[in-house]
Image (cartoon, rainbow, N blue to C red; front, top):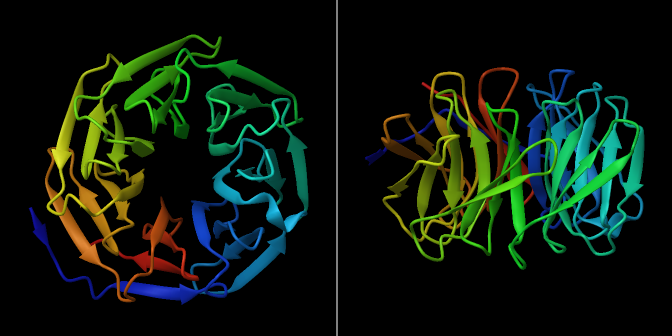
Length: 299
């Protein structure tokens, strides 16, 4: 395990310091789309640095995680507004309230059924919304689990972290849920991604580890050099690597399919890296809560 210098990291200012860039994803238009959780805005950043942003009403909704939808639009969660939002690449926004009050939607991803699947952190469920806005909610077998990030797996199930239940869950399209407890206590998993190796990779913000789980439930864990680094989000590339943010240590990390870890310090101190994605240009893009987006060009 090593930490290497990364002179190829560039930062693009995208907002004021209190706007809170948080989630980020690649859009169908070749741009990066990101949430500003404190300002209630959705931002768009081109690879050459042009920035546009769009206001979500009301501004207090707390847009959190954003993903590319099956309909050519971007979809996002409003954690405090308890709604699912949709924004077109032209900037037109529609919001869909959820049936469960105070649901706290957080993670969101496109499922194998061309619907959007999302976690309900406060109410402890998993939701499904069609591009037309029809919502179905599925309860979890555990109370107080705080489901967080969610991703489509290679087995036509949706895989998600349960931050307060110390477990990884999988839900089938008919709502059947399987729970996999984690070996490390108090690991508090957050981000999760589908790796190129057919497994799901996730971060343990409480234990300072990266985890890997196969569709049949086999779990491996890899300790980070800095166990207090607070890994937060994770994204897979096409070469078998996964990239993750270390929110507490101001770094971007990479783990290979065999568990080798590299870490890269961000140029600006205490920039609070959160969401991470692979951009249309092949670079790794990270939302920095202090008001910028960072681009790391892998070597």
